[in-house]
Structure formats: structure tokens, C-alpha cells
Image 1 (cartoon, chains in turn yellow, blue):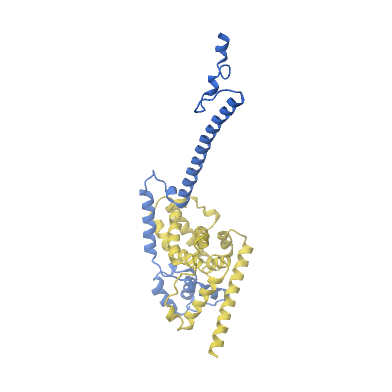
Image 2 (cartoon, rainbow over the protein chains, first blue to last red):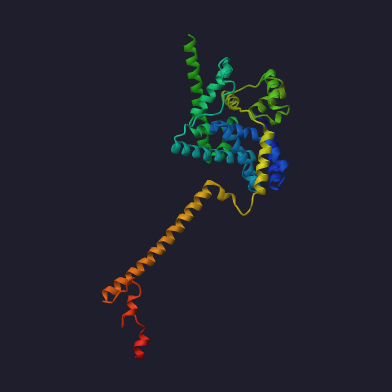
Amino acid sequence: MVPVAVQHEKAREDDELLARVAAGNQGALSELIARHGRGLRVFAARYLGNEGDAEDLVQEVFVTVWKQAARFDPARGRASTWLYRITANRCIDQRRRRALRSFIWLDDVRDEVPSPEADAEATTAARQELAIVRDGLSRLPERQRMAVLLRAVGDLDIAAIAEVMGGSAGSAEQLLVRGRRALRDHLAMAAAGRERKSS
Amino acid sequence: MTRDEFERNKRRFGDTVETWPAPFRQQAMALMADGAGLDDDPDTALDRLVLEASLVEGDDQALARKVLARIDSDRTRSPFLPRFFLAPAGLAACAAAALLAVTVVGYQVARQQDDLQDSELLALASGARLTDDGGPGIVDEPGIGADPTEEDSL
């Protein structure tokens, strides 16, 4: 884990950046994007299962941050938690819109994040494992997937995950535990399947 | 994290460890702190696996440029055409308002026609003669609908 002092220092820097963003400093916004843009994009891409949607969504998130930075209150939580909360809410809205579109036009909504080097992926066990993890993630219930991604990608603790997802710490922990267990089961089943094939 | 993995991540994420994605950053810092590998617990290992499986290509500088371009385009957008009216929700609201207005106007017109028919029925019921166009039949009949002050004057 990152030492607590380092975490506090980073959180304080984020707070200062948001204060500068609220004052209209575009350089501060660029710095905030450099610090959190990648994590938010990875989170959104894997939650939505669509990299293009995630890119647009994260752009919208930072435009919102630009407009609403003055509303951020450091006393109520960390800046990273606030950013992930905005992103998570947008992701949920985006999924609802996609579900509606698929209902009306019978679109086939699938995981569209490309698996890098899909052919080569099968050549090594490590890449195969990553593909299995991606598959397992896409099969998780949405809230479990969100909790797992917030922990792994956003490095948020249980309290922050609960704040982002709008629930209690206990329910956030339950979601995380169930999500991890389901992923482990999925990995174990895949490993057993591979062993059966090889034998 | 091994030294090879550290070097590979350095090429992947850049020289500044502080800007690496969180679990990679944690391990890199642990490696730099004591030069040894990280003593993972199963959850941390799974989190790292999830992060590695989730990574997607992307350019943070390009993202920043796009965000700033959107902010600038929002600024230059005409204030006389609010963004709301260009959004699907705005268009739907405009359509609903137009439908409501047409309904109200149609109701008013229909009610005026009903009033006309009511006056005709009243005329019929009182034995008044109707004009061909069914219009001012009531006032044409003496004593019905006439001005009472005129009667008094007679």
C-alpha cells in the first residue's frame, strides 16, 4: 500500500488543483487529467465494455469538473472519490441509455473493448489469464463489477467505494467480496478446463 | 514486482512512478523502498490482475486537449441557442410544449363552436326564427334577447 503520508500529500495536491480549476486555471485541469484521466478511462472502459464510449464519457466528466469544481468540498471527501463518483454516475446513465437503445432497436450490446493482440493472447498463459479475467469481469453483476474496478483501478478504500456507489460501507464490502469470489471461481473454472484439455 | 517488470512498466507508463496506475505505483514504490519484491496477499494479487486486464491504450495529453477544446467550444456557443434545446431531452420538451399548445388552442376553438350550437338550441327551444346561417336569430325576434332598456322605452 502507498504510505499514508504519501496518500495525504497526493489528496492535498488534488484539492489544490481543484481549487485552481474552480478559479478558471486550465493548466490545473490539464494536470488533474494527467493524474486521474488514465484511471477514470480504464474504469469506464471496463465497466461499460466500450472504449469509445469511455473516452467520450471521461471527456464529459472533466468538462463537468471544469464547471462544477467550486462545488467540491474537501471536508466531505477526497478529490479522487469525487471524480470517480461523477464517472460512476455517468457510467450508470450511459448503460441505461444503451439498454434502452438495445430494447428499442434490438441492438446487440456486447463487450466491445478490444482484447489487445487477440491471436497472440492465446500463446502465453499470462495473456490467457488476463483474457479470462476480462471475461470474468464482463460476466459480473454490474454493482459487483463496479466495486471490483473501483478497488483495483481507482485504488479506493471501502469507505470511498461506498461513497461513490451511494451505499453503506458494509454493502460495498459485500459487493467487493462477492465480486472477487466470483472472479476467482471463474479463473479456477478456466484453469480446470485448460487442464482437462491438456490431459 | 520484479526489476524486469519495473523496467517494463517504466517504458509503459513513463519515468515518474507517482503517475503510474495505483497498484503498479504501490508495487514500484515498495520495490524502490526496500529493493525487494512485494509480499502480496491474495486480494492484492487479484486487484493487480484486474488492473492489468483492464488497461486500455490512451493518450492523456490528447484527452486533455479534447477536454479543453470542448470547454472552448462551449464558451463560443451562441447564448441565444442554449445547449438544452439541442439535446434530445430539449427537443422532446419542445415537441411536448408544441403539442400541448395545439391541444389547448384546439380545445378553445371547439368550445367556441359549442357555444354557438348552444345558442341555436336555445333559440329553437324558445321558438325563435333562425337565420339561414344559424347566426343572430335570437336577437332578431322581438322580446327575445332584445335590449330590455329598449322595451321599457316603448
